[in-house]
Length: 164
Image (cartoon, rainbow, N blue to C red; front, side, top):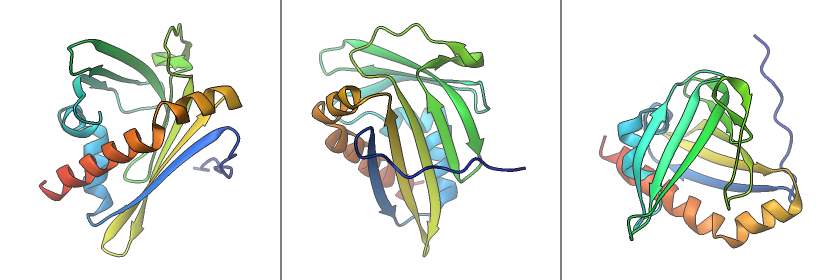
């Protein structure tokens, strides 16, 4: 099977977060692909992930519901584009499950996310590449606190996985 070549991030359109975590990538993968695990780390505290649904296959659903400290809920429905066990997850909210065009009405700019997990010594190099359709969406997502929010979630993931 030929795997698509991932292009280099475009600093005008993309946001990137990298972390080295001192746990095997199989455990990081489990945290990314198991709804009960996702609910424990995916949303930066004090927010929570109230619900998560995963159908781990191309065209499958990746749905999360974030809950604010005030109790307001924000659903986010995505479609998996690529799934390579223990290596890569790719999803987008531009498409609904089954590769159907999505009906979006969100303040968050439309995005495509590529999560890669690479061996790094006894641990894992974790990379999140978040691609946007235009500079405005990229800048808006950055201004919303991308690095702080995704960074805190990555730290929460690492803390969870160390206890698994």
